[in-house]
Length: 192
Image (cartoon, rainbow, N blue to C red):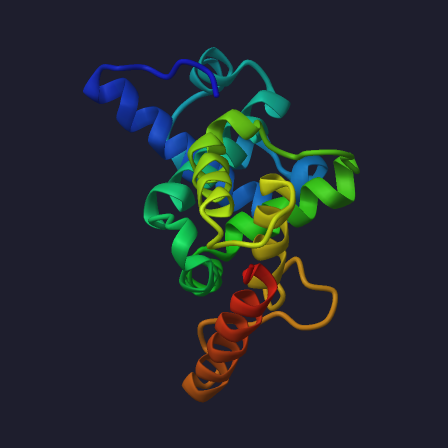
């Protein structure tokens, strides 16, 4: 993510731009998003958008990084409770569907291969998984692969699903049933 302004006014402007751009990109994708709509929603100008983020692609990358960081900050990670973390991720996908929609747009428009994110941003998770594996509390295997599996399981009902997209408006009993299944399935998948 680019170096964003540190003054209160600049930080507020960049926050408005990121929030407006997240909504725009989630709704229209990279190709369909319009800088003019982002500028209007953020109450700013084109010079500030390009000054802070370089170009539309740079803004999209900053939006994705910001969403990942905000989700990561909102979800305390405990390698000894991957089932609980998966359930919290399921709930975060319900609260912030724009994150998963952004990922869906990446899949559609950029067709990435290999890792999608800089693993150094999640090194603490990978290290915690490796320590739990070494202590015999988690199954053996590549920590990145294990984390990827848990994320995929937690996202089974997200907007990136090819089968079903859950929403916060679904009946509470449906969410409870999915959470229970997810918790049990992750526990079995990561057991030593």
